[in-house]
Amino acid sequence: MVPRKTVTRSNRLGPEERASAIANMRAKELDILVIGGGIVGTGAALDAVTRGLRTGILEARDWASGTSSRSSKLVHGGIRYLEQLDFRLVREALIERGLLLQRLAPHLVKPVRFLYPLTKGVFERAYVGAGMLLYDAFSYTGLRPPGVPHHRHLTKRQLLRAAPSLHPDAFTGGLTYYDAQVDDARYVATLARTASFYGAHAASRVEVIGFLKVGQRVTGVKAKDKETGEEFEILAKQVVNATGVWTDDTQAMVGERGQFKVRASKGIHLVVPRDRFQSKLGLLLRTEKSVLFVIPWGRHWLIGTTDTTWDLDKAHPAATAADIDYLLGHVNSVLATKLTRDDVEGVFAGLRPLLAGESDETSKLSREHIVAHSVPGLVVVAGGKWTTYRVMAKDAVDEAVRALDGAISDSVTENIGLLGAEGYEAAWNKRHKIASAYGVHRVRVEHLLNRYGVMTDELLDMIRARPELADPLPGADDYIGAEVVYAATHEGALHLDDVLARRTRISIEAWDRGIAAAPVAAALMGEALGWDAARIDREVALYEKRVEAERASQEQPDDVAADRVRLEAPDPV
Image (cartoon, rainbow, N blue to C red; front, side):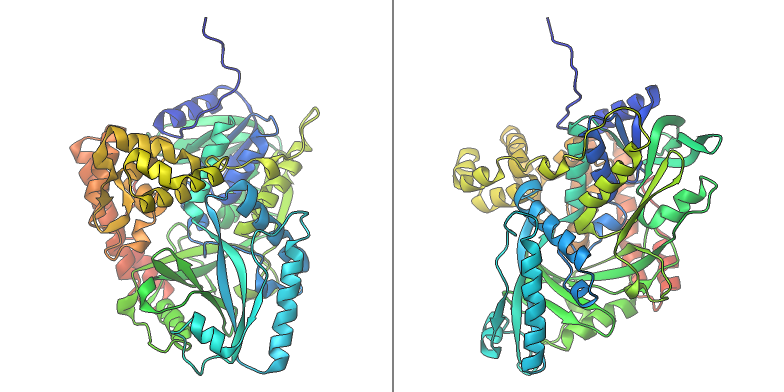
């Protein structure tokens, strides 16, 4: 006799799991329904389901398709917030940084070393050094080691030895310190999958088109499956609005004025080959408004970011020629050999959800987060930083459970590693043996371990069954065919764009933005998802239009023109 399943645990987040999730959400009232599949929404879904609550989460497009895949990809306390005396935010973020590095996702979050350059004399070194000392001290206040080394002082000679491509007259010396970095889109997809593993009903490409109300109380949502066009209702005792820059739009559907407003700030990043300049360190540079990071990213550098108001299409913020020239100008001011537009491999633009205040400058708006019961049955969480997503999610669910009956457990996500985390260090230590056992190069195994953790075995089993899946994708040697198939069968990728832009980062890392890889990846996805030839051709054509529109928008002089050109490319659905 087969034992009856009492707990929903699925290691996959594929089409079958999506269909099952929608059916389950339609069939029975949820305790918590989360709207928004970014870092905070998926974090809230994991928080709720691991408290024992019947949980669902909806995302109108793909997981992390908004802000959460277009960040600076840093897990950091925020050095600049020390100068603003926002010690509470810095301390909170540094505690979370240590947790992410050592417990929650050691396979996805990695230390990165930065240079803070100095241009003045002894006083500046003492001032910045005191700030770095405080930064290190805050990282110890979470009752665990910080997971990264302390800061160090460098002389000018030491600085130029570590970063020989810097202009010799640009700085008088510097300090080095550590933060961490992450593939933000991969993290969110893994987080959604982890929530699903613990029993949350997770469905992407399902849009909330309205709210259900009894009197003034929100009792659920009206939703539309964008893959099929079908509309249906989902009942929930509490709904959590975690839609980031779309917070005000979502609140407007309730018919109530929000208690606070969220403004969108556009930040763009450039992707440049690692060989364009030599440095063992990332760079943190001061600008007239904020700071600019030069971040090591595999075989690339990420250079960003800008900070300007954006009032146009939120789904596809566009970088302009002026944005690109602004970043190149600032980084070239400290490089001996200057970068040009020809050195830029990729460009991406994202929006920060900032809590609106009295200042008109987005760079001065708050990075704090707010949680509120805007109307009965509806909790809103807004603002915040990527690094502190777990705290934001916990606070949102705490607010929601106050309105639920019965004794409900406190948050336990501080102790729940993402899928792939448990046993990662042991797998890393035997990576040579894994490579030998599967007949795969050690460097390839290291790449997979740092993207999938212990779930790497699942991709290697695919390769053992189909050796051709070990072949790299055209124009994107870092990624192999097995990753495309796995994205479709296990990671919720429903369209080619989901794979090339988010499950991998081919759209920003490849010189051709993924054009050569697109037909091969589409064919692999088509085989996994049952697409016919017409569907495969359509997915490739849509992706090519996206790349064409993005390239054209980056030649435009201003936001309005760039937005108009970018929107000429249709979405997959």
